[in-house]
Image 1 (cartoon, helix red, strand yellow):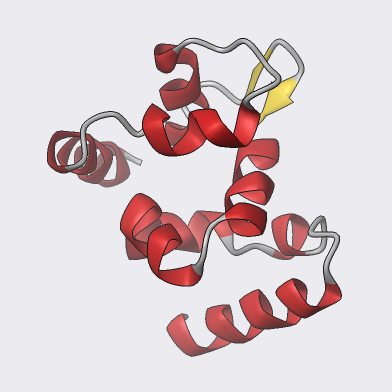
Image 2 (cartoon, rainbow, N blue to C red):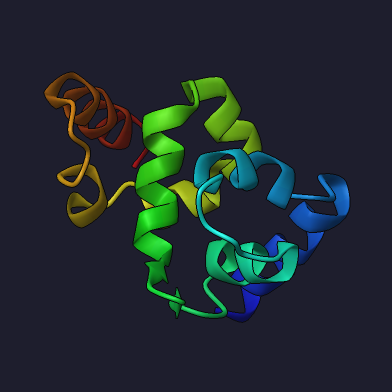
Length: 106
């Protein structure tokens, strides 16, 4: 977990403002920049009914593969591309895409 936090800190330094990528996904929910970053980083699992899983599902549903890779990075994708997250995607095509991507990456 410590290594992940170091990588996340490095990520946040290289790509300041992760909230800029996440805020459009949750336009109808009033979360601060800090709250979005806490959810995405996993520091908090739930804030006002929004879970880390909700963020991940929205991310996979909304952005293309290259944007997700840039936003999350390969190590974070390990956490995102779980059965639990992938099966929550509404599109069966997206589910297949991410199951395949996970099998190739990991």
